[in-house]
Length: 93
Image (tube, one colour):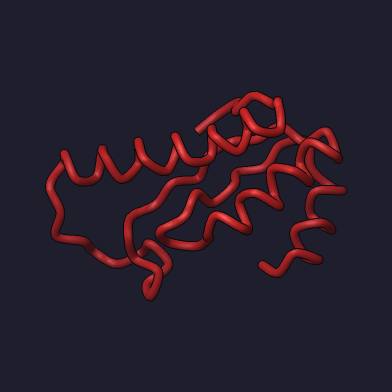
């Protein structure tokens, strides 16, 4: 969703699953969303996905368990870096 939609949603919720990239986001959106979540006192959680932007993470992917694990680990680490930068804790995945 566009930033105004994200802002509107954050005024209505107590926690948010933030897309960590690959399937639905990018670093700029993650940064802005974590910043807004802190401002609105919304708990942050990671919503990782497979490298499938065109299929929004919903297509079957021919990848190994190790590839899936490292993709998810990478994305959680990326979101956690934004959380650290804004001095908030990631509460869930």
